[in-house]
Every structure is written in C-alpha cells, then in structure tokens.
Length: 221
Ligand code: AMP
Image 1 (cartoon, helix red, strand yellow):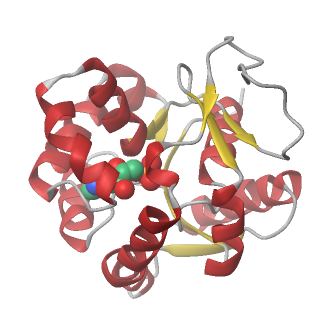
Image 2 (tube, rainbow, N blue to C red):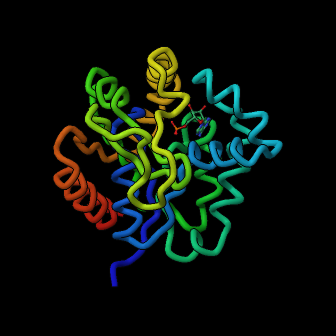
C-alpha cells in the first residue's frame, strides 16, 4: 500500500490545485484539507465562523490569521490527519500562518512544500471557465456547450460559478497572492523546503510531476 503523506500545496487560484489535490488525496489515501472549502462549508451552514467569513470571502480579502490557525490546528489534530497525513491546500497564506504551522507540525513534520506554478494570465483564463458543484465541491470546466441547468455527474448537485470567481474578485485575489502569499515562497525557499512544480502541462503530466517531486523531497529529508 502506498504510504501517506503530509503535504502543503501553494499556488495561484486557478493553478489546478483543486483537481490535483483530489487526485493526490486518492493516491496517498489522505484527506484533502482545503481551508477555502472549510470556510465555504461554514458559510453554507451559517455557523458563527461562516457569518464572519462570508463578506471577507466575497470581497476577496483574507480571513484573520488567528482564526485560520485555530481552524487548521483543530483539523490536523483529528485522527485521519494524525494517522496517514493530509494535503493542505490554501493554508498557510501568510508568513504568520507558516510560522504557526511549523509549531503545529513540530512532532509530525511536513514531507514537502510544493509551489504549483502557473503564470497569472493563464490562471485568469482558467478561472473564468471554472465551475464547481455546490454540494460536493467537484470541479468542472465550462466549454459553453453544457446543458442548463447543469448538474454534477457525481452527486446531482447544481454546478455553478463560485461567488468569488467574478473578474474583480479574482484580480483582487491575484494581487493579494503576489503581495501577501508570495513571501511564503521566500519563507520556504530560503529554508530549502520548497519544490517548484510547473503546472502548465496536462492534468496527467502535472500529477506525474507532483508525485515524482514528493518522492524526491521525501528522500532528501
Ligand atoms: P480558496 O478556495 O483557497 O481560494 O479560498 C477562498 C477564500 O477563503 C479566500 O479568498 C480567503 O478569503 C479565504 N481563505 C482561505 N484560506 C485562507 C487562509 N489560509 N487565510 C485567510 N483566508 C483564507
């Protein structure tokens, strides 16, 4: 049986993280922990966290570090994550979150930090075609030839454009990425912990590159 993995994946929105994380989650049999999905679930459920996060997400800003750190600390402490590991997607987003994560994972350290690299103009084109199942979160790409209403192949839920995928919101998030999250690459890079994977190829080719990169990062540890 393939061993588990503890992985951080960084990359611009629309770099293909969602798709690749789903595949890696099946391959390594570990949960795909997406802080964006966790927050959107909280919004749907109308929890206290969801009510607070709703406007922040819609405007493309970031939820506060303290709240996010506690959310991730609690999730990584659950049995599945402690046992086989996890793929952490969307966290850390800031250097403060990265420093906190080093503390949280001191006992069970991260195997690899991957930057899934796709240039900004390419991700903008991808995001404008991105659709997601409102119920199970499966990703789709619009070709313009879909039947409406569009329903999910897996669960029958509505396939929609995410509220935060409007052009204005996407541009703001990409700007935020450059100013706030890019320092993470410096944080992990300067410590020799970052592996850059070119995300511009086909999904199969990118998946192959990712698993190869993870194995070599593991051997180097
Ligand atoms: P994502 O699906 O990763 O693009 O996340 C959607 C939105 O959730 C982001 O634009 C932020 O508003 C919020 N979010 C997700 N993860 C974090 C995080 N680690 N720190 C702060 N805000 C976050």
